[in-house]
Image (cartoon, rainbow, N blue to C red; front, side, top):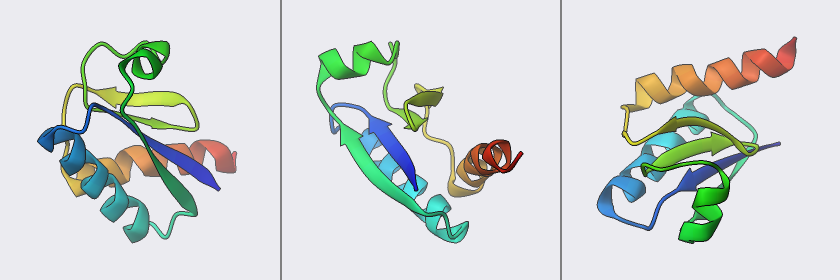
Length: 85
């Protein structure tokens, strides 16, 4: 099971990224849990300076933007394909 992490303070863009990431993960039939990390100190531990950000299993995949569902599907597919090797 993958841990999809949304890093952000809970602003509208952060919520939108969480919604888009969930849609993308569900469309891929991904086995995942969604974790929202809102504490600034925790976010900084990831090395993220611009929110919202998306991480999977602690690895930051994007920061400072909210791509659409299709773009997020490609990002998540990359993670799934990487693990299939």
